[in-house]
Length: 207
Image 1 (cartoon, one colour):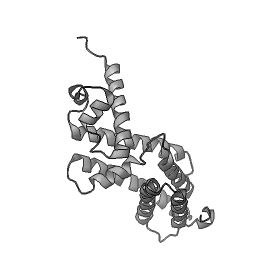
Image 2 (tube, rainbow, N blue to C red):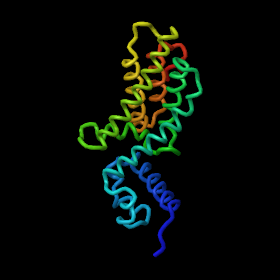
Image 3 (cartoon, rainbow, N blue to C red):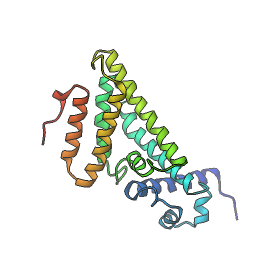
Image 4 (cartoon, helix red, strand yellow):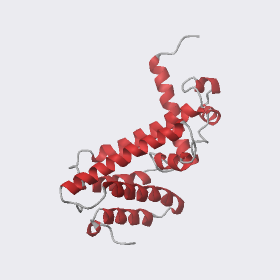
């Protein structure tokens, strides 16, 4: 049997991860098992496992692919904005828009799904999720500190508190919007995010 080219292997791996991300978004990471994905893709288990090695490595690769999607649809959309408050406000909007983009992830943000699923589990997946979330909180805190430096946030504010509050609101919006299918959830989250950033006057009116 002819050996597959590196390009073919990379394309096959990318196809597996696209399916795994969609499945994990809706059903959770445990549902994105090697057996389920092999059946979904019409592959053998041995053919699929060659790309990842085991279930844990598949879950890590799926999470990493979810982080890439988040980066593309949230951070890349705002990275050209002025650092500090302007970028934070734009980021909040992009973040909430991402939660409603069913064409990207039908079950909502994969980072939120991973935190809920692996927060109390030990292992490499937990460590991978924890590392990614610490980095994201650091990004938010950095932008908040810049806004404080510019005088756009109170000098006695705590950047880590602001990062925590924004992430908590976005995560809650992701789960509650999917649960209730109610756009008012996103309007409330947007309003509270702006209140956290001292820009309540820029918020949409309460539904």
